[in-house]
Length: 516
Picture 1: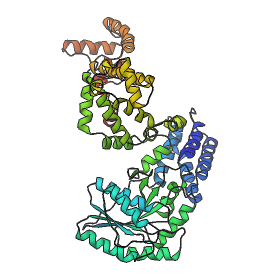
Picture 2 (picture 1 turned 135 degrees about the horizontal axis):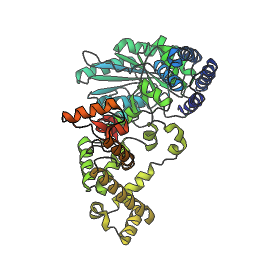
Picture 3 (picture 1 turned 135 degrees about the vertical axis):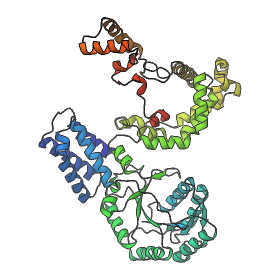
Picture 4 (picture 1 turned 90 degrees about the vertical axis):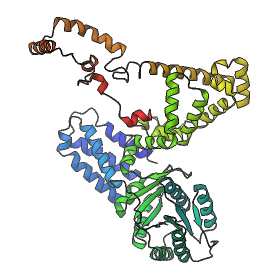
């Protein structure tokens, strides 16, 4: 959704890169590009004016003029202002002190309220809650049936005493649903209400009546992110009529311009709480303004990627797989298990798109076909248990049989087996050397540089024998020798990390290491 906006913003920043100092004309030209990018993305005009004014004021201030890299400082300012208009901080659901917590969904017809009710129920179950869905949309044909279907998929109880299709009183159903949840000890109630094709007095009156009857703890306004400029008018009307407490954006995976996401929060003052990025019940999560701003600016969203990996991969199984890799006993059965866990995280293009700098590879990401993983799984499943445990026994006749059984070519089987052997060999080498070959400070090799770096250090050893050219340093070395102290680990100074631990003190952040 933000592809075109991302491209335009990157174009605006590219003209600043490489400049040691930015003139007012440079800043004005970049802000003009940012303004056009936002307007083209259907961001509301008042929001664009406020945003560009804040960026201009800060870009012309001391924080840019005194920065070592002015272009990066401008990117930082744009990022911070984007986070600001998206809400600043992540807003969570406020649960009632005395259950059940009542959550009411409101919005126009077609925004995705009923599907969202199922997604929200599934998410609440993951958080340890016991949700109940209440079918209070009695106007739209088959709305009650649809809620029952998504409720069953989410594993949530659905309260539907009326058949719908124009029959029944939605206010009475909503009230009875809350009472039933309290009786059956469900701690969260999600009330699905009727929408309309446009804003009208009847819609607002019914929504306001339901709100008055159930006194919800949260009223979530569900809005289609593909709506464009009209989203702001609709949001303002619902804010006045129903007074919602938070916003849920649906269809963020669409290819329309995403101005609604950047406008609604700023215009209404209500936070965006959740975002839906697909049709599956799993395509739903808490909205993080800082992470969304990072994605728009092509700075990635590694935290969300890590969270998805933690959900998909079992920690104990991952540890066992790592041990097998290191010991050389990793089999195709283990590989199949890892592939299946990887697919639980979602599409490969979505996952890779969360990495920093992947905006320049949009075409390649869009051409990625997840069915290739299904082909690999089919090949492995066409093997006998013995072949999976020991791929070395897979000769020519076996490969032909596997290709026939999986509906693939012999070349596909050859490619999979050869790549598996190459990967296993590489992982064993890494395990033997304690980390990535040639990486300073790899685990198990404290302060040990790679081969090229070691070659560069050899002349240094000869110079050390003659003594340092610095008299003060020579005196310090002599004093250390008299006191019996050993010099610091050899690899530290060569790589500029310093410190008594040498290069071993330099490590990747834990989260990134876990992800790798």
